[in-house]
Each structure stands twice: as C-alpha cells, then as structure tokens.
Image 1 (spheres, rainbow, N blue to C red):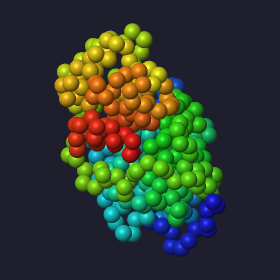
Image 2: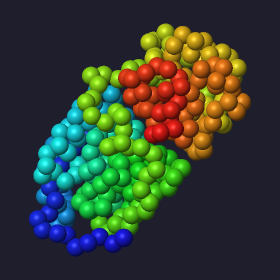
Image 3: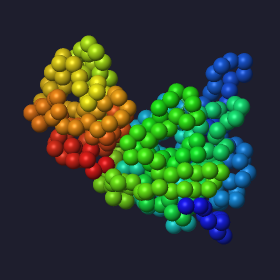
Image 4: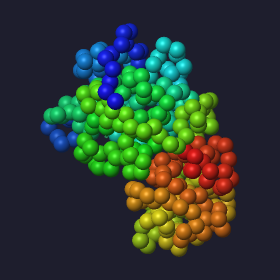
Amino acid sequence: MASPAPSSPLPRIRVLATGGTIAGAQTVGSRGYQAAAFSIEALVSAVPQLATLARLEVEQVAAIGSQDMDEAVWLRLAARTQAALAEPDIAAVVITHGTDTMEETGYFLNLVVPSAKPVVLVGAMRPATEMSADGPMNLYNAVAVAAHPETGGRGVLVVANDEIHFAREVAKTNTTQVGTFKATHRGLAGLVHAGRLHLYAPPVRAHTTQSEFAGPLPAALPRVDIVYAHAGMGRELVDAAVRAGAKGLVVAGVGDGNLHANALSACAAAARAGVAVVRSSRTGGGVVERNIEIPDDELGFIAADELNPQKARVLLMLGLTRTAAPAALQALFYRY
Ligand code: GLU
C-alpha cells in the first residue's frame, strides 16, 4: 500500500543507537574504516528530511561494531526498547545497528519485546563517509516504516536497501554488498522506496505480544555455543564446549543438520549429560526435520526447523531460561 500523507502531529519515535557501519567513518589513507565513529545526533542531523516523518528523540545505548554485540548489550537494549515502548506517547522505536549481527539482535527483540508498536532495526553497508553511503536513505526509510500506522503487530522489522524484512526471516548473506539482507524462507515483509511503503503478508510465527519470553528480562542468558560441521569433523570442539560450561549447543550441520559420526557421538554424550543439542544447518536455507538421518528421538536432540544456527542459538538461550527438556525446547522451534 502507499503511505498516507503524514498526519499532524507527527508520531514521536525514539531512536536507540548501538553503532555499526551506519555510524562508521573511513580511516584516512587506508582501506579500512571505524564502525560507530559518529554519534546518533550526527546521523540524524545529516538527514534533515526525517523531520517530515516523525518527532525523533535519540538515545545512545552502545557504540560498537556489531561483531562486539553480546548478551549483556542485548539485555540492555531490550530493556531500553521496552521502556521506550511503555511510554504512551512513544509510537515506535528505531534501532541503528551494525549489519554483522543485526539478524540475531532483531530476532532476540522479536521474542522479548511485549508490545505491538513498531520496532525497526536499520544499518548500512557503507560507512557514512563513503561514496554513495546507504545509511541516510536506510535511516529515512526505517523511520518511515516505524511511523507508518500499519507496521505495528508484525514483529520486529529490519530495513535496508529499500526492503522491509521480518527479523525472524532475515539473514546477512554477503560480506560487502548493499543488498546483503535476504529472507531465505518466508519472504519479505514489504518494500519501502523513498519513504513510501508496500506491505506484504504479516508473519506466521509467534512474536512480541504472543511470545512467552516477552516481559521481564532475565538477569543473564545461559551459555550456548555454535559448532560448525565439516568433512572430517572431530569431537574435540563439542567436548570443549561442554567442558567450558555450555548449557546448549547448536550444530551448524552439513546439509539437513548432519554431522560426522565422531562429532555425533560427542553430541549424544552431551545430550545424555543434560546439554540441549540443536541441529541446524550451515546451508543457509531449508528446514531441518527430525529423525531423517539422525535418530533425534533416541538421542534426545532438537531440530532447528527453519532457524539458521545463529538464530537457533538465540531461541535456545531464551528457551533454556525456562526448561532443559528436549521436547519442550523442540516445541519452541515450531512456535517461534
Ligand atoms: N562490523 C560492522 C558491524 O556489524 C560492519 C557491518 C555493518 O555495520 O555494516 O557493525
């Protein structure tokens, strides 16, 4: 649908900044750049057109490249998002974020934010000082999505490169290109072109207001590690994760979540010891089903269904705050 003309008064939107390339500056005389070099005030003032969309207020929650995102920052960001959305006059939250781990942060918030108000993550692939920086238009589009009266109730969204993605569906698929974000399973949430929206079907899986994790946040999240499968995989990294105290393990399996017999027997031992073992896939697409080549029922494993390894880790961490029972954890992977 096309966007209506902006109504008056404009919605009040809080922008929570975490850093990333959208706030990045190229380093003089080298190929590199420094993420999170600019403040959110500088980013917003570089796009004066934002004033036609919303009344923005800004808060710097972190100033990091998103490769440094961790559970402590997630919990702080979630708390600040919840607090903003609880204010009756705040219509939506926009979060600026590096693209490396945006899909994980977005999916985490999709599960813990108890509000139907829009939450929109936005980043950029090119630093703010680069030729054809994509950040300003992405930020403008993200605020347009957040300000639109029909984007609430669709779960947490990610906006980049004129596309609107569901946080659950989106994955970063390319190291450098501006079209890096793809929805590998259920498709786009919509398109946004120079602030004009075209919304597609709402998401099917439970999120935000329907999520059992939405509400009071845990003080910390349990350790969950990801082990990446490959030809000739041994058992050592699985054993090391268990020794390091992992309460859960996600296997980025080959193909349909498979792994070499050596690593499989280590995972079976981990599951017998009470570690939650989730089989996901390193392929980047497709569903991991139960009991195809690996006897999940017998070994007490969990299949990741549609979630990629990094998102399976997010759901498993939250699930383990409630239960360690494989059947109950499996049910979460079919619901969220
Ligand atoms: N490593 C940076 C980050 O994730 C670069 C990616 C980006 O923001 O585009 O913050």
